[in-house]
Image 1 (cartoon, helix red, strand yellow):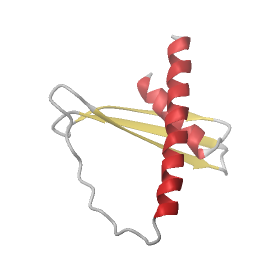
Image 2: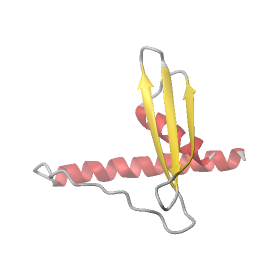
Image 3: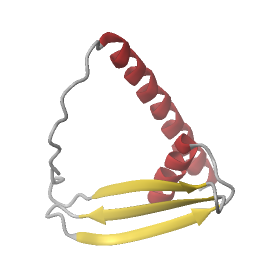
Length: 104
């Protein structure tokens, strides 16, 4: 199980670095602000689920809070989970730990 966690963490870290690089390139190519887009939830295919993971950071309490919510193809709530840990960390690390916790 430890090998799987190390693999997932490494993969998440690589994906985050790729995302940051793409965002930097996109920002360099774009000379103007793009208009806001309406984002609409798209249901997963039958038998699949969608998981939303978010992290919050409190310098005052030196804590990171991570919340996860899973919904089915109809948008119905399935389960949720929350995790808190200390000490506070960088945002990208907290987000990756949230992803890892959701997969766990």
